[in-house]
Amino acid sequence: MKQIPSIERSIAQPHKLAELRQAQKDWSTTPDVLTRLTQRLLTTLSLETQLGIVADELGGIVPFDSLNYRHRIARQDFIFASGLGGQHKCEYRLNLEGVSYGTLTLFRRRKFSDEELEGIETILGAAICPLRNACHYLTIEQAALTDSLTGIPNKRALDDTLLRASQLSDRHDECYSLILCDLDHFKSVNDNHGHVVGDHLLQETAEGIERTLRTSDSVYRFGGEEFAILLPHTSEQGARDVADRIRKAIKDILVDCGDGKLSVTASCGVATHLENEPPEHWLARADDALYHAKRQGRNCTRVFASIG
Image 1 (cartoon, rainbow, N blue to C red):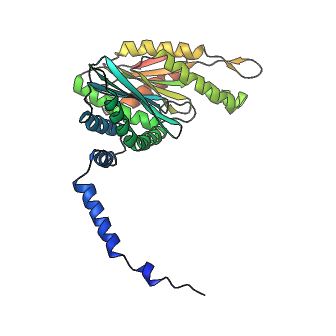
Image 2 (cartoon, helix red, strand yellow):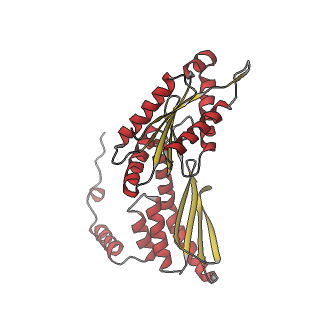
Image 3 (cartoon, rainbow, N blue to C red):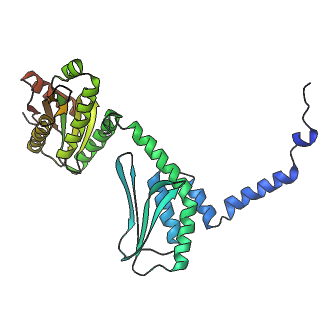
């Protein structure tokens, strides 16, 4: 037999609606500092923006000279800094349910009092859940831009970075160079030794390339056995030298394939960004240089000349 809902439960309660309207009014018109902090943090999932909000609200309660935050997210260091100076510090490891969400440190010229430390802890306690959500969101964003096998950025990340690099090169009249690096005869590695060995070789190659680069340089898995390396503030000749170092590093890699050690060589194509050049044209020139390296015997570097 079908049950008929009670009349009492199916009719809205006026006093409850009035309470809700008053709560909404209090929330939006006269927020205390913790409510205001929460409201502001809920407007964004950007970790950088959230940390700026925390610094702003915290500074209105406990004066400080600088705030630093550091966290490692998806193999990358995330660093936020606001202000300068201060020899006294208080440091907090932000943990929630046993998971770390970074370290936040405040600095100033005079020592923090116990009362001020209590106030800081109250603010951070209110902020930790939104900060956790922002960290999770950034992790998801970075996963979409990361190659799952090698752990380095993927082609989608390269496309975004090349666009920014092209704009910076034009705006500041600076040299940016691009290397495309392709493992020679990689198909035979998979055919003769299996994909497990091939995957291990790709992982070792990514690590080997990273070891040859400066912190300002970046490497991407462009596709299959091909890698792209972006070099800021690097001339054509400088990029050729880096490409040759990369080829040597790859040649020195030895992978155990059961019945012996496996090594491979690589070919590289180099192109330096031209004035007002779209990123897709820049990439195409590097690819053309790589094609010539492959056609001319492999295990070499070829440059798409910027002039002539």
